Image (cartoon, rainbow, N blue to C red; front, side):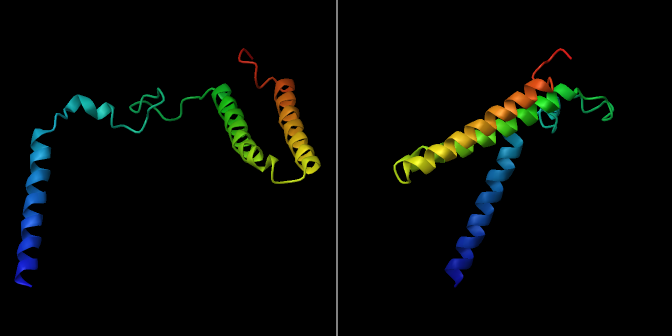
Length: 117
């Protein structure tokens, strides 16, 4: 019991010494506070947060997320090719690709892909 207490105290002392040494020897400076700010996308954190935001950035992000999720849904179709009936797999894949193309066509008609609007 005494051995456990002694080892626990030694471990706590060593870990505290290491933490204090890392704080003393770290090379952080006042200039690095900008890197620690949560804004990494070009916004100035010192200015007003109510500045207008370009809608094109938002639309491109939404389109990217939609197609990214759809690509993640296509990946499991490849290994299931040998496991299921070929006709069912073909109909499902064809339906999914048609839905992707219809979504792309709709976005094209709404000029979401056109940057100079």
